Length: 285
Image (cartoon, rainbow, N blue to C red; front, side, top):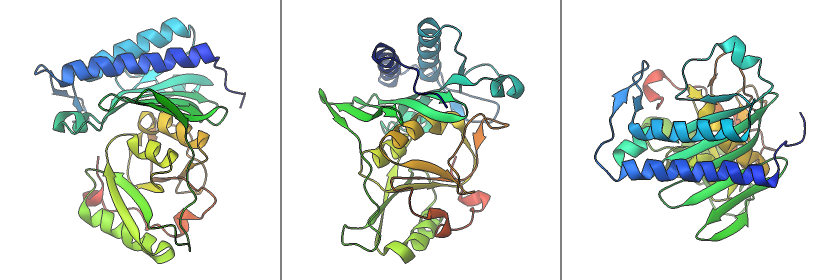
């Protein structure tokens, strides 16, 4: 894998696109014309998803001519073609559409750069709250909020220490039984476990900031759901580990992930403690 092929000006262009998309989302969020419909898999899509999609895809095409872009809202791309791309942009224009519809404010704009199957740069923007996370393993990761910028650093997991409880995050729509099962398993090595419910890729970003320790996820997610946050987490010292024990990779035969755990301390054997995959009734979408 080559060094990160982005200049400071290009990083600024990508983060500016994330902010522009976020502004378009918020304008629709605060209005009444959401134009809600459903895709073929019954997942919701709104005018905000599409507005952000066009801003980002058009902007990346202009800034990086010849670099492919795969957005969750793109027309279907042949898996063979997608897997032939060595470097491309992977975008979720509105991660957390259900959070958007529920008006929780916990939705984000995700833009990731994939290089040889790895997430090497990401920008995640939380429009409600104006938090911009960006970075990757070649640059370190950063948070811009309230007019200030600071580096991100994961914390060491509180294993066998008095550092406080293990802070585990899960989908805000994860079932109580699933959360209890995960908490019980992790309480064996860690003792006290505190659960924090969050939506969208905020879960990975808050691990990168040192506020949380891990995010176990069972069941299918889109590669676009995780890629930007994964790059940011890597830049802060964490990682996303597949159930095989290897780093989660992209450009897989289909653009979906199976079970994984996002962690701030990848030196630990997380999958030796976590329970087996859950039943379908316990998996959140």
